[in-house]
Image (cartoon, rainbow, N blue to C red; front, side, top):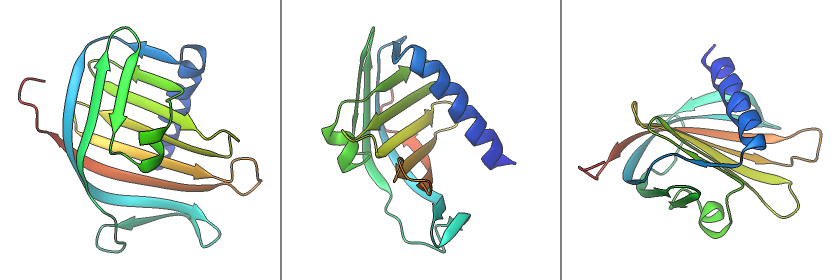
Length: 151
């Protein structure tokens, strides 16, 4: 059920984001430390199977930086090498959430993330082989704490 709600929420946000790819409503600087919790994998070996941190090795994110400045600047650093070097197509940040999405030039690879400020939950989705019938997904869940005391 959580997967369904998560998927529906992402589709809702991304359908909204397609109409308005930039929506920064407040200035915010986040300096996050995120602990890996679990991953859901969809690939030739796994069909949306969930693995906990005890079952699969994944690194924590030691210093995730999110800088948002009204009206349209959102910088995300240290989420992934891909996100560090590419322009984000979807950038949304308000008092509750940060939502991003980026594609490679061929639009065959994408990364998206949703960070919920109130709960500290970060969901990072990597989709590969977008143009093929059998897309692959890697959806990682993290629990984050903000190191900035003033935000």
